[in-house]
Image 1 (cartoon, rainbow over the protein chains, first blue to last red):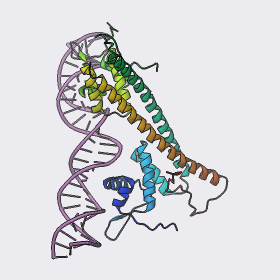
Image 2 (cartoon, rainbow over the protein chains, first blue to last red):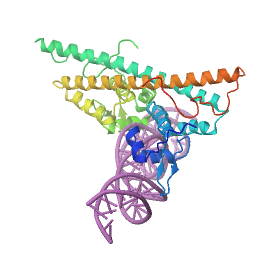
Image 3 (cartoon, helix red, strand yellow):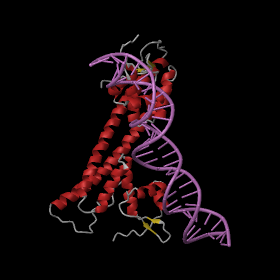
Image 4 (cartoon, chains in turn yellow, green, red, cyan):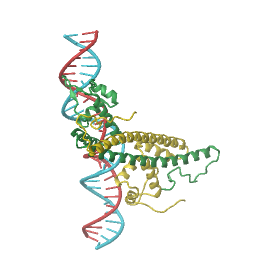
Length: 150
Length: 150
DNA sequence: CTACGAGCTGGACTCGACTCCAGGTCAAGT
DNA sequence: ACTTGACCTGGAGTCGAGTCCAGCTCGTAG
């Protein structure tokens, strides 16, 4: 069997994943670890490499905005094993498209803000060049974002 | 003056911005409206077009992850008027790069998930083609995400 | 032996961003 | 005169995702 015989303490897992110890316990309670965390004789958690791998996956999902209940669902399917692959794939695909949509929206925001930045730059360049902007002139700076066309 | 003489009720602003009435009041309390909302004789809020414009900007900032305190700060600068343009520009530029970073991270996630999707697709394609995958074979599906290289 | 550091548990707390509610006001319609 | 519907206020509640804490247990090092 694949026995990369190296048990990990929760502290080690924390430093290796970047998650806090509290978060690791929290995730376990939330049931988003595919297979259970063993305990040693003293009742302490004993992790293995595959936990790290799984946690990395979870971090990717979380980091891309998947809520914990959804991750739990995915995890449950993974735990159930054979026969759930289709549904797992569907979940990932859906999440993929949500991320894509998110990225799209962020790009829109970026464009708008980029426009606004341009307005400010122009304004500052001009006022710097001595061209005093007379009061009352609509610079588009005060209030409106005045988007390009959307 | 630019007097698009059309007063708006909070309800109209809500439908036009897509924000809820509660959220509009909340935003006002939070001080993220550049200029004050007038009240009519009955104490009701009277908005104008520029409020809509400003709210659109706020929605862009919120939607791209700027927290309310930061928006408040930006708003305060805008309210202060002349002389704060440089700082406002700086804020927008910083936010721009945070969005860019965010997009970058999302792309990474997308890649990893795309990889995982590929793994599942291959697996399903094979098992569909009758190639029964024998138990114990490491498909990379159960637990690991097994990223391409990173 | 005892002090220390790392873990354990259950439960409370925080934070951000809303969202909801009770109880009240007002203007217009029937 | 009354009912509606839209709005008002102050304050409480919710939700998601952690984060923190008190009080306890180990195993080891001095």
